[in-house]
Length: 117
Image (cartoon, rainbow, N blue to C red; front, side, top):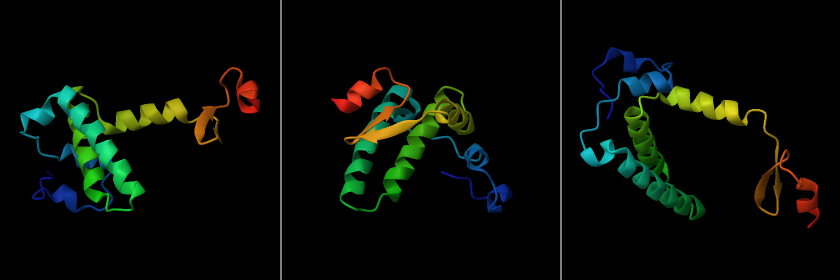
């Protein structure tokens, strides 16, 4: 939950990471436990996938995922910005192709034989 009494939140140009710093601590102990937060995260990924495929509203699903991700980053003393940057740096130079509905990294060994199979 955001502390809406803080004047910094009225700035429309505030970054996502900075906005998370104004997030009140979640007092629910189940969410504070990283193992449980991860389990709920995956449960909500499943719900999101179902709602996307059936074209239902996904705002609450995305919000729930952000709550659990925020809980996980807090538990491991990380920032969302650090996680985004780390993920981007891992994938920025990768070259993937879609084959038969599956994403395959072009640098993967034997890709030519896999594509011909």
